[in-house]
Length: 76
Image (cartoon, rainbow, N blue to C red; front, side, top):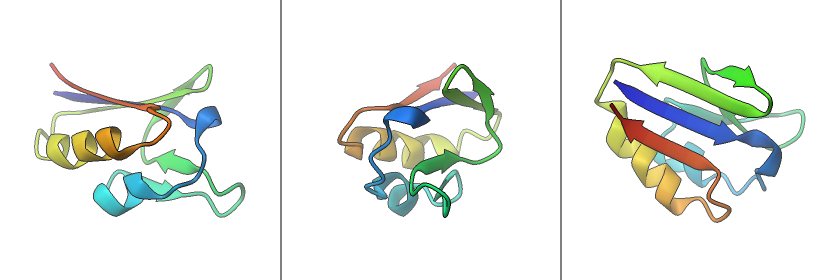
């Protein structure tokens, strides 16, 4: 299982996550910040739990490319 967490309120809208993992992230047209698709919000932390291990590599690259380090990716 892959667990992805995004601290959306700290997003600066650089778009790296969308470029590296377009199936999991997109940019909001309202505020220009990243959106973690199909995630659940809990106090500003958006979390996606997926049984699809294929998404780990792209999301890990997005996490490492994020200049404000607000994306966390774990494989459990």
